[in-house]
Image (cartoon, rainbow, N blue to C red):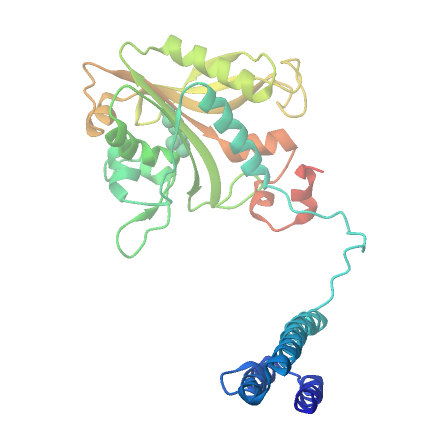
Length: 341
Ligand code: DAH
């Protein structure tokens, strides 16, 4: 029928010109909408004979199907075009380019610290994180270093305007942790420490320690010795011996300097142990009753030991760094030595 042919021709031209979704919607309404061409032309049907009605109805339907299928495929065509355009505007990445093989790595201090944490976790210790900015009370008073005690001289640090300090040792967290857990207690707390130091190859204003405390009923020096020997043998992955020399630290009584048989030469004498067979590694001692008391723990009922491992020193020994300042430097040549390839 002429009418329908006209509509088809009109539609073919209209759809060919469509460039956007909005234009497509207009075409859809123009042809399939309530007052669109196809709907209006159905009104002609009432003037036709019964036979003509049937044929006309079929033709209109066929045209309707053609129109809506054409609109659907135009929609897909427009969507694909939009995706292609978006892709074309994106920066191109060539996934086949060979990479340089360079990748980042953990800092040597982090590597050793993680290893220690794993060892202590296996022994049932809680792993705690201490503050870097501490109250003067926690850093000094709470570990039995009252104001004007000469021990403060050895640990001069950076005082903030609000009276707090950059912590000079991980012992500063002892009080907080004792108060948090009470007794019995097994915890380690690695941390960054700060001191006002004259800098040289073995002194740095920023360095790392790892403190440990173990508090329970009847803890004695024998426990301390056994524990340190086991722990250091794990750290160095070989059997080591330990020996204690008297050492003074206000927060332990008795206090010791703990030496470990040189893990590198097995005690025979080498460059690392300066041919003495021993390495001074870890001051320690039995926690002073005042410190327990200030931590809210009854010294009549509980005893305990504490140790302060020089983490930076241990890292230097492990990797053979000669200058502690390398640990805080950005020198990749130094830090790369520990890169896990
Ligand atoms: N806090 C001490 C320092 O930095 C190290 C230390 C010594 C820690 C003896 C301890 C200890 O827990 O028992 O010089």
